[in-house]
Length: 155
Image (cartoon, rainbow, N blue to C red; front, side, top):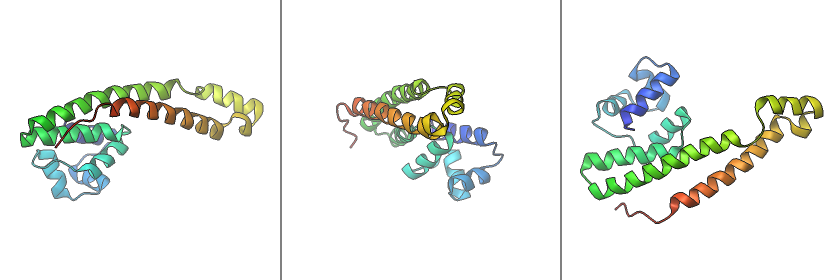
């Protein structure tokens, strides 16, 4: 995805009607937002993190997409090739993480049933959240090892 795609998705998701509101949400100046929207400038990693956090998507996916766009715009074909590989890997990892988190832990109906039967200390929301967090961390660690694979030379 390109920067403008992410910004449009963010505006739609948050129901924003102006670039000014989007600039305020991402804590950038309206002038910077105008440059991002017009393709004159590409946001840095900090803004990419904010976009990812607001959209609820993995940060590394947004950063990789934006860095790919930056490399292509600058005509750096080797860097673009490397970032394209990262985007492909991160995309499959992101899908695996989403699938993994959907499969880990009980459904909301099951968790509320456990909480009603045994009380919150035996299986309530905090227990389920900590169990899900541990399992999710294991998924992320395993996938991070897969993604790191052979080092890409981006210089």
